Image 1 (cartoon, rainbow, N blue to C red):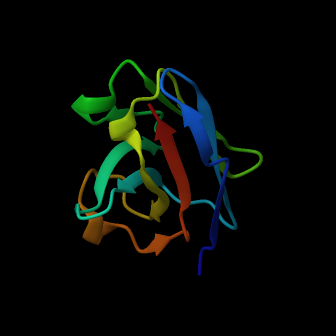
Image 2 (cartoon, rainbow, N blue to C red; image 1 turned 120 degrees about the vertical axis):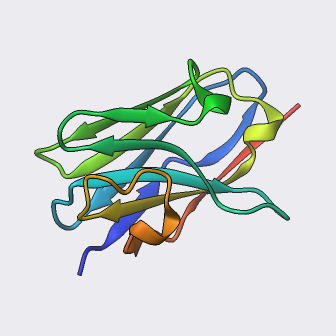
Amino acid sequence: QVQLAESGGGTVQTGGSLTLSCAGSAYTRTMAWFRQAPGNGREEVASFVTTGRKTYAESVKGRFSISHDNAEKTLHLKINDLKPEDTAMYYCAASHSCFAGTDRAAYKWWGQGTQVTVSS
């Protein structure tokens, strides 16, 4: 069983920055950030594989940066130039597969989420 705990959410103004963190209780091959806005489905925004491969959704490329502290088993998501459309609950997820990609079903473990609200 892998436990994930997100932190770092909050309310920021448009153009601001935030860093989200996800502390894991064990090592997994892939970790990812998903987000879900009210009335929308849960979408992946970024993923990190232990091989070092990082992927980003087109909508966040250039503004979001994912990183992983292996020693601390912690995943980070740096978000720059926040926009109102980034407002959502952000979830951390983990998978033992290196090929989980954007497939939500491939992620077995999920955190409780951290809320990001961007005010205009």
